Image (cartoon, rainbow, N blue to C red; front, side, top):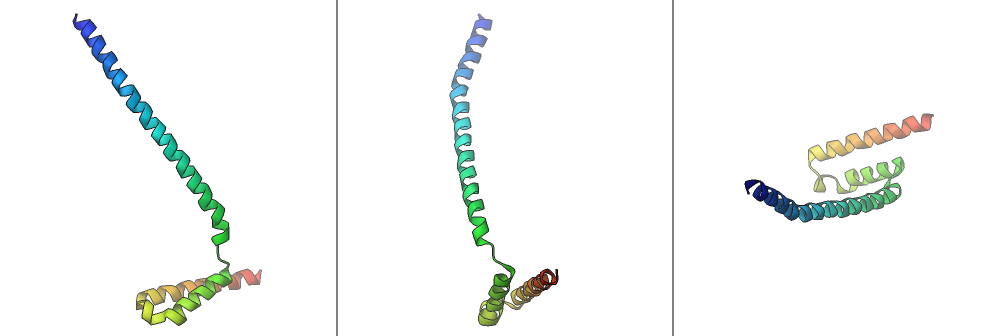
Length: 97
């Protein structure tokens, strides 16, 4: 009798758990499909959003000269100047070759 009761309990627990596990798997698959679609869209637009070095230099110059101290702190301006110097150095190296 105890053996049958244990068997019945095990089967009923499996019957209750199986649909819940199946639903979780289905939800994860939908989530993965959605993530894959979003990644594809981001990668597709990535090539169009990349700035050339010249564009990057112009943007940094505008950020520093036109917006300057009214928008940024001293530390942020130092960082922008450093980025501008790096971009100019990269452009100089690329023009050398």
